[in-house]
Each structure stands twice: as structure tokens, then as C-alpha cells.
Length: 223
Image (cartoon, rainbow, N blue to C red):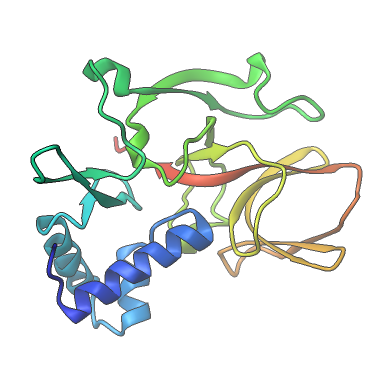
């Protein structure tokens, strides 16, 4: 059994809670703010310690590349740590998940229509909190404060329902948007994570509104 310090356990619990509630692990800045650290470097040091102890893995090159691990006992009783949701397959190539990349979406057409698909990416399925169905190219900075930036590739699982607080992809009229969901009664609120953008409100049952999916991860490319 892995022994964690009280602070490490607190951070691990925070990561679990964030993934359960929003589908995303927290950023270093969010961990630092939640736990009162003076800098994100302190959060990074604790994350690296958790990774060394096998409680998490950290994927390089992604803004939210923290993955929880689970203990798997082999037949000899030895502990093997693997990312949650990642299976042992007979060939490395089979571990790749093929995801279509959706660019601009034409009004009124299905989000996965062939004309919207720019290319296909092969990715490690263990990078995501749930298995995604497609990648959506993010446009704009309305979700900047949760680390979702213009040009990022959002991993999306197709769903028609989501919980309050989760980040969703929604269709509203001619637009497809990424926002945080909050529903009260028949009122649906789509919250930006940037004060420069306005809250979007719709009434349940509106014909030109549809939930297209749930955000379950993020990829970022660097030039």
C-alpha cells in the first residue's frame, strides 16, 4: 500500500473530485489556489511526488495531463500501477484510439458529418477520464480560465445529458459552443470561464438547442 503524506492525500482527493465533477483534472494553478499555495511550483512538486509514488501519471505537453492510477495485483501479488481506463493489449499499436477531429460545424448538420472532419488522430486512451468519441477544435477564449484555449483539441464523449458543473459541447442555433453547464428547473445556463464573455441562457425544450457531448480531456499542440 502506498503511503502518502496528509498534503499528498489532500491533493489526490482534489484531483479525484475534479475528475468526478467536471470530467477534467485540475490545473496546477487551480490546485495552488484551492490549497493556498503561494505558487504553482509548490503544486507541481507535490504532483511529481505523487507520480513517483505511483498514485498518478503526468502526460507531458497537455495542460490537464494528470491521470489517476489504480493498483492491479498480478498473480504473484505484486503491485502494478497503470492509468485508469488503460488495458493491457497484445500489441502496442492496438492501444491507440482513433478519433476524428471536427473543425468548423455547418449550421443544422450533424457534428460528426464527414464534411466537418479535418483529420484523424491516434491517441492513448488512458489520457482521458472517459472514452471520447471525437476531438473538437476549440475556437475562441471563452473557457480560458479553466485552461481551454483557442486552438486546443477538446476530447468529447457523445451524450445528451450532463450534470451541473460539467463542461459540455452544446449547439445553439447556428453555433457550437463549449461552456460549463448549470440547469435550474427549465432554465439552462451555459457559463463561460472568462469574464469577457457573457452567460448564455436557454429554456429547456428550445428546438435549436442540443447537447452534443461532454468534455473528457484536452490535447494541446505546440509549434
